[in-house]
Image 1 (cartoon, rainbow, N blue to C red):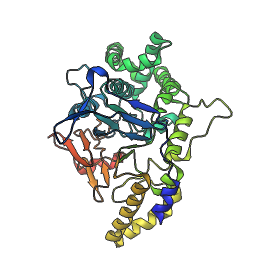
Image 2 (cartoon, rainbow, N blue to C red):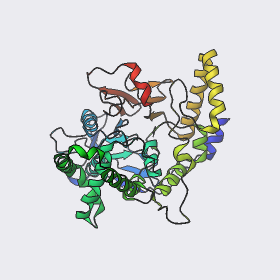
Image 3 (cartoon, helix red, strand yellow):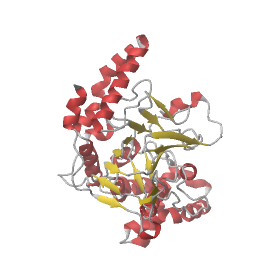
Length: 405
């Protein structure tokens, strides 16, 4: 009965698609049929603003987990996924593939804006080939828009200062400036490094300037907050659901498009107006806090008693607990019309993996040097089948994950 109730509340995709992504005439994609004939690949159809429901017929989908400001590892993961060139030119080579990054690009690293710029640049290139790049905002994105900078790397404040100065050269052309930052950020970073002195680490004025620059960029209505607002916190591509930490039935009942719309509106709205929207409840207490592992981690306060109760049940009746979690997952997927859920948020020491009959895929491997500095891994999806693409480098010791969950 629960699934029927949730289906009745699920907002249907709009009858009129918001966007169509088609291959350019010079790079039109063809799909081979069973009888050997080739037909034109159907365009990608996007519903919702920000994107919520995406139809990407016959596309290869690649999911990448948390990046946390590590541009080098981000490039490694994208090259491993076969969508980024390895010649240093940051060119899209994924043809009509669809790339989904599941959040937490910000914090713990010093190339956050460069990564955002790289994904923006790749999205434009991918669309020209009938592909697309999507992002899902994670809890670290909402934390920064809220002004919570506790996990910001000191050098990331420097990047914000440099980026604001850089923007002055592109006064009225934000899209061009933001897209080009990935090609120019290295030189700015080298110039800053060459000009630094031993005493800079104690320069309070310099640090304050970085905090102010970050506040200007990420506060609600700020340039980068508005850029983040282009992306939702929940995304369904074909019959695969992508979100940062997870989704529960009451989130679906609240409304998938409604969640995306409310968080996006909050990010885009300047806070200096009386009628500015408050930070949505769902932005920090819900979608980003459900971790589909053995236990729910950092669950919302409303479910605190439920969490304690379930933890007790797990200790006494682990099989029954797994059954309950599997049922919740099944009800959520059925309600949103998805086959499986792909999440990040919690580093997986065993690498990208699935559980509950592969109804949940966990793709955060802690690759950032600011987290576990582990080997990049990505999830490749073709139709209803998924496989993990990984390198051969050794992973870190299990005990080191505790500090970063």
